[in-house]
Length: 355
Ligand SMILES: *Cc1c(COP(=O)(O)O)cnc(C)c1O
Image 1 (tube, protein in one colour):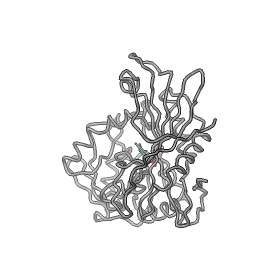
Image 2: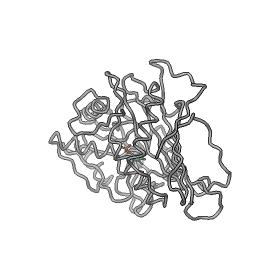
Image 3: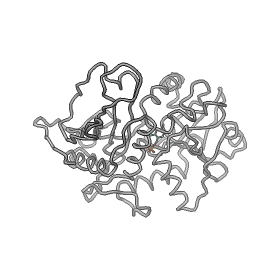
Image 4: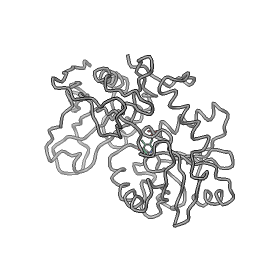
């Protein structure tokens, strides 16, 4: 499939060098769009000026939330190369989300190519200061004009780009986390393993309550027993207990993070043991009481590694590593961001050059 390119005639002012970018607030000049209908499949692939969408108010996505998205980043190296990090994983996850949401599959190779073309058009938007990147947001929405719950026949696949700095204002400094024992994010059999809009709609109430109490995010417990740790906010979560790294196993309700997988593989490469298993909040607090909870951190594309300095579970406060970033979190952050930015040798073959 050909990709047509229509360049903007009114480019926007780019953020100034060194300006605080925040996260997801600034968008580039162009976007990629393609459409789906049963007769033509995915078609009309195009790069066009970034602009609002015209939508019918009865578009199915607006009512029933048949929507999926991805999150990834592009980096510009000192030499001026543009790198993606494991884009094949995001494309494969798009199709896994599509499958759960009854959205037709995308051609993963074609969408990677489309993404590269879009990035090339907007490459001057990639920030180069430390801890910045071009955040990439591909998403799919159901566009049938119809009220009534069924899979839509038509869809739009869109990619937008946003130059970003740190996800949390804290940067790589530890965040305070509220252990959520009332609201739940996902259950096995639901959609927790997909990046679908509704999961985030379900999560914001808990986040709001936690923030009112002075916490940055929540630690989600399983939806059945409210016992086992699942994720932290919109990140996967890792703990270092008595020198061993532990992360919840993928049992259907957690999102299989690309960063999570990368952390597990890097730890293995370093020879640091990492267990994927069930982990109860009780076990964590017992480890902390015994002085054995060495570190805790979240992992995700947006923040990469986000250390956890404090947990609050039913009013019981656990301070982790004196509220400071631990050595494993720090080493992982440096190691992953060095590979992503082309500052370190890509020993695990994870970077993908946009050419
Ligand atoms: C996106 C996401 C993650 C992290 O996935 P990455 O591929 O590492 O960015 C973790 N949990 C949830 C709920 C997410 O939406």
